[in-house]
Image (cartoon, rainbow, N blue to C red; front, top):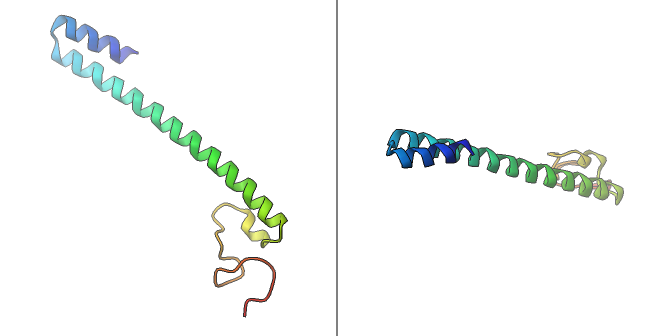
Amino acid sequence: MTGKVESAVGTMLGSSSLKAKGLQKEQEANSIKLQGQELAEAERLEREAMMRRERAVGHGAHPGNRHLGAGMNIGGAGQTGTGPFN
């Protein structure tokens, strides 16, 4: 909000530096807001991934796949589950 006020005052007074400073603050505020939205979405997706991993382990996937980042490499050669892979 401060950026908008500074920009408006800069426009009214004809001060390009004050207007530029206000626009810069406004852009920084928008950037911070966008970062917060992206982080919130990432956390939502991580919670969903953990829930799905727990469900997969409950259906017989290797318990090592329960953790984020485990991928599908448990058991060797990209195999999951508990059976022989030779």
